[in-house]
Amino acid sequence: MDPWRIRLLSVLFGVLTIPVLYALGRVAIGRGGALFGCLFYALSPALVFHHQAIRPYALALFLAVIALYALVRAARGHHWSWWLLNAAAHTALAGTHPFFALVLLPEAVYAFLAVRRRALVLWLLAQAVLAAPWAWWLVRMPEMPFDAYLLYRPPGVADFFKVLLGGDIVRANVELRPGPGSWRFLNAQEDMFFGVQPLFNVLLWLAAGAGGAWGIATGVRNAKHQATARWRPVVLLSLTWLLPVLSLALLSHAWRPCMFPRYVLYILPVLHLLMGALLCRVPWRVVRGGFAVLVLLAYAYQVSLVAPVDARTSWRAVAKQIGECSSDEDIVLVCKTPGLAFPDKQILEWHLEAVHPPVYPAHTPLAVLEKAFCVLGQRPDARVWTVIQRSYQPLHMRELMEGFRTGGLACKRLAYPAGEGLLLYRLSRTDDFQPEPAFRMPTAAEVDYAVMFNRLGLAGSERAVRAEALRALPRLFDLQAPPPQTAQQRAEWALMAHEECAPRFARALAGSALAIDPHNQAALAALGFAALELGDFERTAEAFTTLERSRPVPGIALEPALGRLLQDRDPVALRPLVRQLLDAGMRIPHVTLVFLGLSDVDFCCATDERSP
Image 1 (cartoon, rainbow, N blue to C red):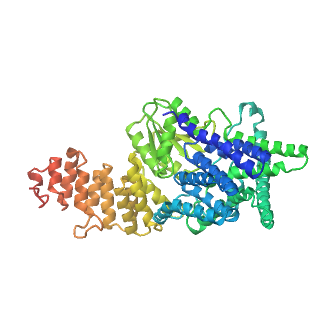
Image 2 (cartoon, helix red, strand yellow):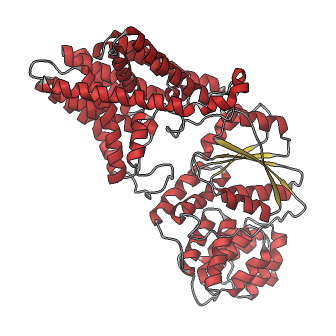
């Protein structure tokens, strides 16, 4: 499917928001402020970014502005149709994005101040009915580690003001990243082009801060004179700009980190209206025009940073580079946070040509290493293209590069136009290539184990089965364990990694457990299983023959599990291994031997568990 056609729906909702925003601004702050607000809205880099994305934020913003406008009209005229439109907008909004429900907070405060009590009670009852399913969902949400997603953290004062005032400022908004080059007509002055960025940033900081401060001051002044004047809609705009950000900041400290610029995206058009209203109140037409030109230049500059060259997105530029330089033997790996590599894989495939190398997800740095060594071990002339989105996954690049060097891989980072958010590497074999490199286990001082193991444990999804990734998440998140220090803890992690189809990770964990306790039963079993899956029959025999048959392995039925693994292998290659295991006293189920075609007289003593 053409990605540009899919993006058109978001573009449509973004364009439809403009007349609704103008209507809201005209009622709240006047015609001039509404026009300036719509102009700032159209030039907002954050909204340009989200209004072409294949995500629900353009629709959610459209519905939020409709809800605000309907409430203002309902508070003025009390006609039932506006109340109905407000309720319908919130009904659709509740199914679009849960955090956009926070727009109810400023609406509730404004309705309490500006609406008759009977209408207020009915409105609150309707919103309570709409919120009931979400309340049930929140109560039943599974517990997650506090640091399950490294991009989120409890915000400090600086983070709070970045979201409140810096939504349109590139880099202050973590979702807006500048490209490395400028437009072609600015190539000769590129240093100057990027050198003036702090000046334009300061202009936008001051404009946003002044607009927000004016809105708050106007609301306070309205409160002092409320006995003689009605509550003006500008109070609703000020509350909508401030309360949701404050609520998310408090939730992030009291509940779990959940503050991110796009979750309060609807504060941006409101802030644009407040800035436009303040601009219209600047005395003297020449001064007002000068300020307007400066603000518009600042917005145009910010937009130019996020679209500096012909290739509109980093994905398109990376896809073009891969399409021009790859061969039929190559593969492409897309590395990102667990669970998010699948949509990124689809985005890259959309931008690639009709004929392109196969694209696979890789949820962890270790997955990149394992897949690269697996492919290059079988195809000496192939190359592995690795795409890493560094803004989402704080990779330990030094460790990743060390893994490449240890295994004898040549790693070259490739330059491409139009983005600094993606890293593109090309991996190939060298003369020192090692098919089975020894991956060094990280120490507690190097990484946060709670996050590290959550990600590595998702290796089950390496087979591109989303269900396995989702099944692995709750199991690993329930552990919330400190770094596994004892041999038994590491052995239990190894068995879990084996169950999640991560044999190399299981082998590394089992080896670290056996380095502490050479006789740990669970570690020996995990090592045997992992070695068998990797085809290392010698290590498999060594691990299982070392097991003490009188001591059961906690938490696992050893013989049935071994039987299932053996049934997936070549019977001829397994014959020497099976003989060694039987001689060591390992009881292999007779049905497994029959399945493998090994139930001859030599193996009649294998087990007493005969099939009928």
